Length: 145
Image (cartoon, rainbow, N blue to C red; front, side, top):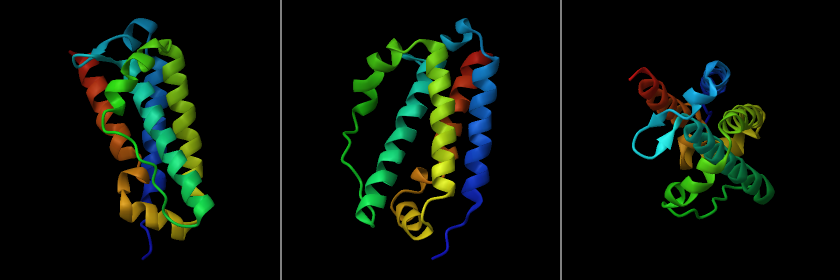
């Protein structure tokens, strides 16, 4: 199976969207609520966390030579919330941009046969734009309200 490489541009566009939003927001806007418990800064920290999770899948898959997925409890978002909230807002935004850029480059240059296997298991690990845009939509909608 040949993986559709359109994910490269989709991921790059989502990373550019992260960067543009992070660069234009004030400290106050980074603390703007998104839903009941999150802020825009927490959205950035959340995206950085899950991009790093995909980086771990890439590391383990590369080392093993076939798909390798670490077990992560569904409750990780709730467990991590106080940690993400403790990250200074501007640092959360910067971490998110840096992590997205690094993962985009890694995905773009990852071994195609291994990337294809990862994609078949969970396309959101390859097309990071799906997860990123979902949360960026929420953050931007909250900022407009």
